[in-house]
Length: 286
Image (cartoon, rainbow, N blue to C red; front, side, top):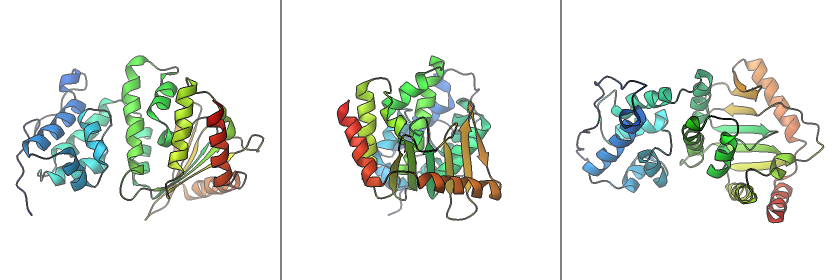
């Protein structure tokens, strides 16, 4: 059945964007959240209705409305389509302003956009749990270390938003190789660490996620995460972190080299069953 939706009252696409320095009540992030909630309520739609119509997890609508998750471009286009907003669309216009407001480095923006479109994500994590598999409490502890307090909530929201790709109807295949030392490190408190390990075990029950442990002593020497992104169409990408920053690699020969390195490291990892057993043992010992 076709529906006629009530036009939004928050912000029209033709209106000029809010100044980046404006207060939180007039920020692009607040305007986005308010527009979503107002449109939904004015059209007598529940959060579940909108989630079903946009093919996303039900809980994400509440997160967007409360600014606990940062919206991506694809979900913004879905909101514009669901509410039948003429192009360019309120949410499509506001989404890049939200990202700009958060002051993300250009390279990081490019990586997150590519990650959200990947058909598979393969990660070697020598030092920390990758952002895609962190619990919110674990992410908060990690982000708090050495950062200004004013940036933590925005960074936390962004990190949790990235995990939406694992909750969509067609989630990517995710392979994570974790060094054993990462599992044995206490993150903040024993409880936070225990919950993080339990989260890993829950993820390992999903058919599209494979987490394997690289045992202590294996000859794996990386300064930071190595990530490989593969797509349904087009060439893959690699992303390496270290020295306080990240590099997105597009050159085919370098991506191929990174893939070979990943395969060699994967050959050193424990089986999924043995990895699960070790994670459970460490969790129960805390």
